[in-house]
Length: 347
Ligand code: FA5
Image (tube, rainbow, N blue to C red; front, side, top):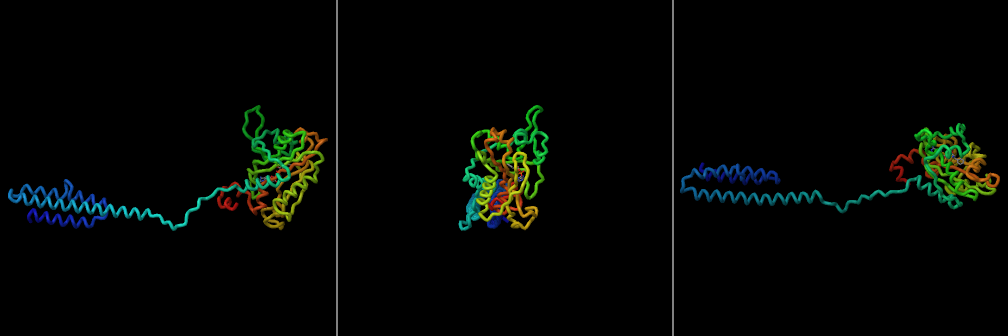
């Protein structure tokens, strides 16, 4: 086989191989195999030097023509493959404008916030102003000023989280109820009449159940003035329940005990889940307790700066999560702090 025959064969082989190249990486390999410095074409052209001088110009011209043909074919293949890759990328990135959009999830108010606002407006219409008081309290405000001196047995009604304090410093605790707020509101207003509510978080070292959380809200309420009676307390609470649950709501007062009120009561609403029949949520009583209340004890009135001979007053402390459970039919208080979106999205 002459050198030119070999060249012809190489050219055919290279063209055939080029047809099978399907991407730019394979094309680069093809280029180095056939046209690279160590490629087949260079190797074959080294044979030119061994030809007789008379044949060399024609053979050289043929080699040049073959190389030019292969380079041109390479260029065309490169253009074709680049085009194909671009087309492929377009198709992969194509946007289907007919697909339905993904709606962004919209934030909403937590059910506790919603019920707090409902409570503010129901009591606000009855003339109660909103006040705030601290979440970290002293033993004095959480207990002593509320008629519970050290070692008073009623302190056991509230299992308390104490904070670490240095020896000699006053005892600090997470308030177990919003009742210390009564003292702040009284001292800010005495001897004038006051009607206020004090919402906020409370904490108790409590066995967590369907109705009890360790962290929950309370809304404290007080009304102090001349001739405020137990009938005013009952009227206010029944009117409040009717505003929240409608005129047909069934309520009841039960005698109770709190050291800071005398007499004391607890106020129940008929259980929403069983309509009074008795179930797990109401502990088979048919009723759910939403608040404690009573006529403010003379000692507490005095601690707040009032003269119990001149004025009287009532106070109540309600659990807004319990109020919300009844209003929205929620069967477990643990949902409120679960952070579960399925729960939250329903409100
Ligand atoms: C008190 O905390 C009194 N300070 C209420 C009070 C205020 C009485 C003013 C008289 C005058 P009690 O522990 O019962 O009382 O709690 C009051 C309400 O808070 C309950 O009726 C309930 O609705 C809510 N509550 C109490 N403990 C929890 C708890 N662990 N989880 C959720 N809600 C609670």
